[in-house]
Each structure stands twice: as structure tokens, then as C-alpha cells.
Length: 570
Ligand code: NOJ
Image (cartoon, rainbow, N blue to C red; front, side):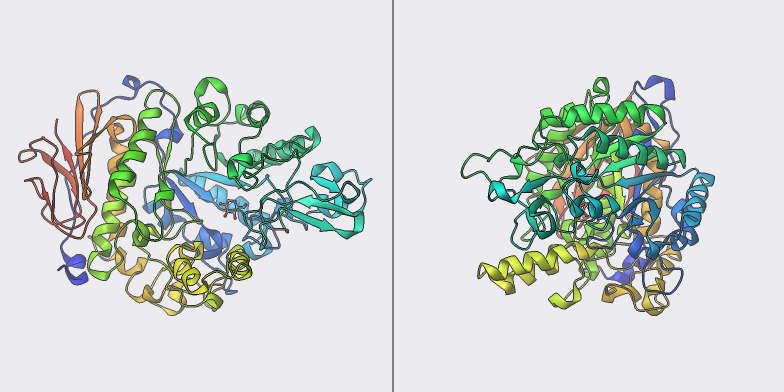
């Protein structure tokens, strides 16, 4: 057994490497391929004004911390004006800052602070839907003659009930909401406070491009397009084939999506040095390529959910994880570019889902997972707090959760007589609030996040897991993460190198090589709490260890629980 005390005193070794691959030997280099993206959930990062809610000035306070991580890009979850039905994913004014988060002057200071530190900023663009409190929607719902009526989808009630459409967040999963004032239904694929914008209307599309240009002019370096797979719809709403009405396949990647992206690319992306990524990568590989291949002028990189979605209640199979990651890597080896991630604000915590959050294994497994994320081909998206091995939030009862869609799902479960105890058990493990608890800065009151009671509970382990303690410990997950970003930065083999999976059948070890211009590195990762053997056929006894999460890295192919080692073979 390993104690957390051992964890604190004798882990981690690194050997400096000299970059040998020169820039001009690698075709297709791009800054955004070489970047490590750090995702910040502003509501939970740092509260500067004592209202229990994280804000922009809080992020400004922590800019040096962010810089110290060695990340290159910050992706901010939405910060625009919003009534917060879905924590900012319901925008009521796209050109303003949410009151809870601060002012436009704060934003300007934040972007300058990031740029001064050579960190780029990615904004989350939420344009599948707006808030029902957006001026466009207020006008649209006021009269059928409103100039904004066609910014949304309506179904006039005199035509009868609209054809079934599925809502992900509605308590009845019904995407049509009857609106008495104009005797019509409006469409909402998410909650009824998130009416869908009508992308078949060129005026609406132009509004969106103007909004994006507004942020690009302010210096934004990239855009993440929220729920974008859902934007293209047939405005006539033909019925879906019987029995498939609820299948999400019917809802994503509608006919004109590529036209819209090409138009957006021409209007916005091509005019600035920005990168673009959409949430999701379509229904299949062809869709994914069509979204991101260079010659198509649509998006910069794919953000595919298939790998991360394997991590769920009840566990996952390592062979399955390897298969899926390897499949995506192979598909994009020659063309296009991928994002690498296992966690984000819609998922539970990295170490709780993919590793082992018991105190004796938490740090080891967290470092092992960080090693994985930072040594794969593709742009890593790393979620704030994972660098500390922050765990799931320790929710015990429904009242402690804050995510409104979760309560809608609970109501739905109740309405069909479902097992509510099981629902709660699942939520404790996989609800997205788990990754939205306040950032654990210190062992002080409210984890150093705020002087007031935070908007959501703090994970009970903050006295043990926090940034202040980890700063002082050379072997902490935090300092290990810094070593990883440095290693990746200095070695293009980790960014561009060919990936080859080894020991495919092992349910314990994930082993792969990365190769570029004569360099060959081997990464060994034990995903279990037991000793495990890596059958790679490669002799590592004389190989150089570049990074490992134990004081002594194993060089005989036998890996200690959750051990991670990066070897230089030649
Ligand atoms: C995806 C976002 O990541 C999620 O947080 C949000 O609830 C939905 N889109 C709706 O905008």
C-alpha cells in the first residue's frame, strides 16, 4: 500500500531532454497543434468580490498561476450576460459580460494579462440557441410579425401539434414549448429557456458572424462552437421515421452544416489568426473529416466524444479505451487534427472516473492520466483542477446539486416511476456538478476560493487537496503536470510523432510509442491498482527515463500500481 505521505515525499523524476527536431522538418506545423489548452470554468475558479461566485477578476488574480502551468491557451466557458438557466450556456446578450463575472473592462484586462504572458484565449460561442431572455427572442415571441420571428423556429398551433422533436434537457424530453401569446410552439433542443436559433435564416447567421468578429477584434484567438452539430435543421420539420424520433442521429449534422461552417470560415476564421473547434465531431469518421480536413476550410480540429464517453458509471474497459483512441489517431494520422481529452465541465472528475480517487492511489493515478493526455497526438484539453487531482464533489443528496438539467432529468425519472435511489447513485458519480465544485486553492475557509459561501458545495477533501500545499511539494500532481507541459513543449515528437499501440490485449497496461525524425519514445501506463507487466517486446533496461511518477521508474517491464513512465528509446 502507498500512503499519501509517501506520495508527498518521494515521487517523480525527470531528466532534461534536448530538442533535436527542428521546426522546418515537420510539415503542417500550427501553433494550435502545439498548444496545451487549459479549460477554465469561471464560475468556480476564483471569486474576487466575495459573492461566492467565481469571476473574471478572480482569473486575473491567478494569471501567474496559469502561466506557471506551462499551458498555451485558456478556453473560458461562457462569460456573456445570462440568466444562468444553464450556467451561461443561455446567453441573453452576446456582446456583454455576465454581471456575476464582472465588466467588459475586466475582460479587456484579462485578455491583455493573458497575451502579456503569451497565453491565447478561446471563447465559447453558444449559438445553437440563445436565452429566452435575449432581446431577439423577447421580440420574436411578442408577435408573429416581429422582425426577429425568423431568428427562431416556430410551429403555428393551427397546424396541429408539431412533429416529435427530442429535447436533451426538458423534463419531458419534449423540444416544443407552447407559447400562448402567438399561439405557436417554439423549438428548444436544450431547456425551454434555450430556444434554438434558426440557422436557415441568413440574417441570423450574419448576426452570429458579427458577434464573433466583435470578440476576434478584441483579440480572441480561438472559438469553441457549443452544440454546433445541432444547428442545421430542416425548418419544415418533417416527421422522422417511426421508431427513430428520439434518436440523436436525426438531430445532428443536418444538411447544410458544412455550408454554414464554410461561410463562417470565410466571414470570420479566415480573417484572423484564430483556431476553431466545435463540440462533437459528427456521427462518423467521414463527418469528422468533413468538419476539419485542411482543404475544406471549415474547422481547425475535431473534438470527438467517443473516447471520453467511455468513462461512465460502472467503469470502462481499458482495451476498449485503447481501441477507440487508436482508431481516432489512425484516422487522423495523415489528415485533419484531433483534440485529446477525458474530462471537461460536462463530465465528472478525471481522477474519479478514469483513475482511482482513494487517497493511496489518487496522486499516482492522476499523474498517470495526465501523462496519457500530454503524450498523445492531438491538442490536449486539460480541465482546471485536474492538475491538483481534484476529485468528484462528494455530493450526498439531490438538494446539494445545482445543475438545473439534472433536476429536469430527475423529474423525468420520477414521472416514469424510475428508480430514484439509483438515479442519485449515478449522479454522485457522473453528474457534471462533480467537476464544477470550487477550485481548491488552499486549506483556508471556502478552500481559498471565496470569502463567502460558494454557489455550489466544496469537495470535502480541500484541506488535503489544494494548490497551496502542492506548490510546496516537488512531487505533487501540480508540479508533475508542469513537468509534462514542459516535456511536450520541448519535444515535437509528443505533438507530431507517429503513434503505435503496443500490447493491445492488456487490460492493465496502455503502452505506445511516439516516433518522429529518428526519435522514438515509449510510454508505459499502468491503469490498475496492482503491479502489471507491459508486454511490448522492447527492452527498456538501458533506455533513458524522461519522466516517471514514482521515485524509481521500473525498467524491467513490470509497472507498479498506476505507474507512468516516458522512455527515450533513441
Ligand atoms: C454543451 C455544453 O458543454 C453544456 O455545458 C451545455 O449545457 C450545452 N451544450 C447546452 O449549451
